[in-house]
Length: 234
Image (cartoon, rainbow, N blue to C red; front, side):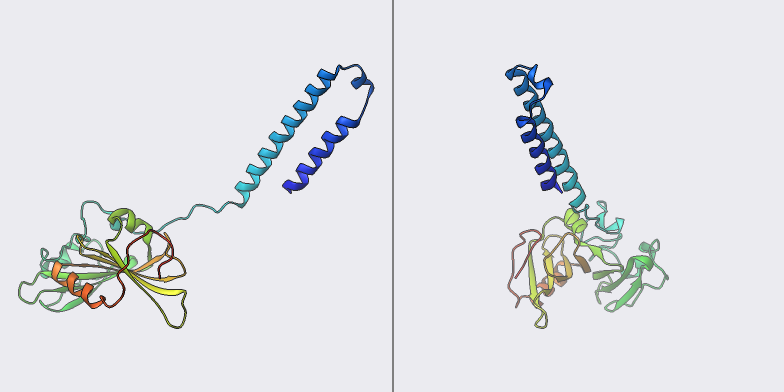
């Protein structure tokens, strides 16, 4: 479309330069050249507008990222989540702390055991506690529907390191785990192709220091990679 428009405009300019009319005979060479310059400027302006319009028509719309508001909560900094903090919150208090989100008030378990808590439209959690102290020592949040990665990176910052492993069946299919040392927090994703702002987070885990170190050690046989933003990881 743009090429056709440019060709037509230049054809008009050529015809104008070759055509003599009674009006042209009454104009001086300077006045004729001024008219031609004005025509060229008008043509350039039309081409510029056309190119901008075409760029807008073919541009990719902004990406909308999705995440529950509580993932962006600045008052409960990881490893605190929904008011629960490993090594601080007693397991017996979990029901009361989560009452705003619980689908059923049944999120409790004896010390040393793990319980599953349904958060209704937000997904669910697995919460475990220490056998001796009765304090929560770690929990996993499984968002359902999945949340996007970008809001988490914006809230928690860049991870300290990550592990990435591809499946044998499909080399474009990989599992990526992000680690935050100071926050004792781990983000897990299942990715096809490149890691994107809209890559879906399958699980977020919050631990005390002991449980976090044990998790890191379990995955230590994978190469430890540095975060270099969104894109490809081996």
